[in-house]
Image 1 (cartoon, rainbow, N blue to C red):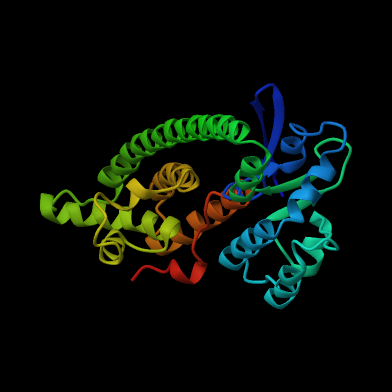
Image 2: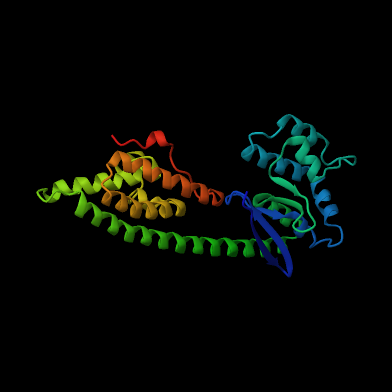
Length: 284
């Protein structure tokens, strides 16, 4: 599992963030708690979790995001929350309710209690309204920077795909198009070869994509992930080579699939999408 880590600097305090799926980010409650008590941040977290409002918030978050959440046990915990005898820790919460919004990580470096960004912001608000605002500001800046880099990377791969498409169409023109074909007839050959690649990468033709997405503008490739664009660019070049070798379309689709699967496995840890099953790849 690839783990992405970042560090925020909030009012001079380092706050760690990590994600394993590149979608849900977990922020260190231990680091946030150090704003109140640098020597014993665990006490701050446990004190927050003794609060009935906190337990209700955590339970609601889990019910919205976690199908494995133990609602029966949650109701029992909620009944006790807020009383003098009530004690709750992150580990106990996770073990009793199968919670996923809070995670305890072991280790001397990077260990501690982490929570989904939704929960972490709630905890920061309890710690200090001022600290929460600074945390939100730095977190938003981080996400803006990430989105900007992703946008640049996507555009770069889109341009590479367009360049490789020129190589691909040149091979079609020289090796697949009989000279007696009209422009209209030739356009069908180009579209058929383009759809061959669409089926390999997306599991559907351009027409099928438009039928399945009637409210979207543009075409199937305008909505591609970085992984899909990278794989597409590579198999466009490879398809041109296979065409020059005289392979039929049915032969080429299986060869292209082999390359696509190999590249998918290399890119899979980056969690940038998946390719369709081989049974979807037989052209009609």
